[in-house]
Picture: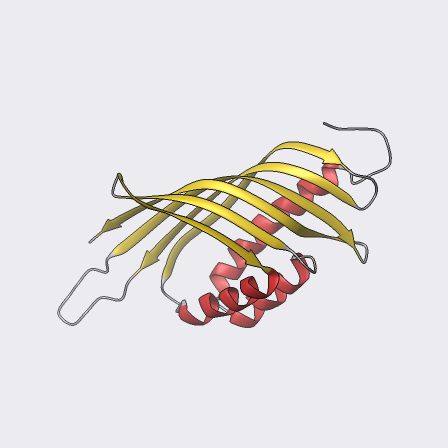
Length: 173
């Protein structure tokens, strides 16, 4: 829904979410925990909470489900941990894409956005002694999300987020 009334413009929201995709690619290439923390601090609103229900498949078979609720502080801790654990050569490929399905403006400083996210990541494990090839783990995730976007200090940030999706994990040697 796009309205002419004053509010967060659909185009501004589209640009913001696509910028998130580009910044995520840059963060994954940089492997710098401080950059991950700074990005999280900037793009998550104070009091932000994320709730996600993810179904997991490994090599085509359902292996389980994960349901989690994280607040901004939890995400800051996990983001720093991921940035620390990911070595310079462990991520061989990464992409993040978003398809915006609906935008409902709630005045000049808030909007609800329904979107589908697709994330693709290939982890490469170090080859062991006597091994010529590195093994790879590919994770493809797709999630339908509903976000509350807020304008704070003249910039957009993500508030409450609810997601439901699926993660497909493939391993290869």
